[in-house]
Image 1 (spheres, rainbow, N blue to C red):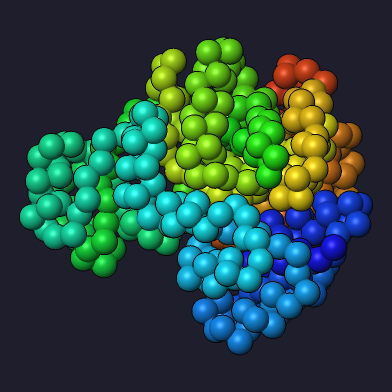
Image 2 (cartoon, rainbow, N blue to C red):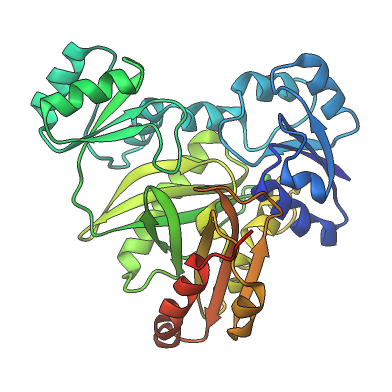
Length: 367
């Protein structure tokens, strides 16, 4: 059985590697002929909105999924008229617009930070009068890893940021003094079966995810239950199939929704070695209607992203319990080129070795 994946990055690469033991084969569509997923499967290089390219891509496929949420919805709709596209394109529509995303979550009774639409300086001023400083001004579309947003502490900063971010099509969000960011990964099958991975603590640097800890330490059952309720509501409302990630702010015993990703997610990479079934395998199981695998953790894991650096592979692998994933991408500043997972049986053992892991992840080797 051949599956199509829209996008040819590392998430698509890892989906394919998880799918080969299930007897699957893969074809990727990506604008870049150098996309790293092309190293592990057939790659069609072309524009997502070119209909002839889409027809060529779809030929002989059983179904299509995607590995990033900025695939044009028009491309997903075009393919949906010819074969199943999962998760449904509706999830793409919601996730691609931060205003629609937060409005959707609020309609489900899921709390979010306060927000306002901003299409003019007048709306920005009115929003700041309502929400106060500090506040975050973001593009409604695009932007990731800290891009497309600005922290506002004065009206002068706000006016500059408004023009720098395009002068419209923005969302203003009230600043939330949260204790930490958590994420929940849920997976829903075509059969309606649902499973959840444990809550994960995410730590960022420069707007980019640097470290995930799984399961998140110090999580009470009530907090986990809230996150699962939120994810279940979103999946059911969207008729969702596959892995869905919700990024959440912890404020005391409350969780506020920040963003969703209708795909496998960076904060779930630890599942490759740290869970009974990886997020990648469970995503594929869900698409095919196969029974979902166990999401129970195997002890405690930390996942460190490799951002614009190539570590000494021998030094990384010399630390017991480490697993190195190199994506086969050219090293560039700010680019995710791999990750390291460290697994331990207890949280205390993992916490003891975290400094070593972070040193390995940040120490570059000349390339």
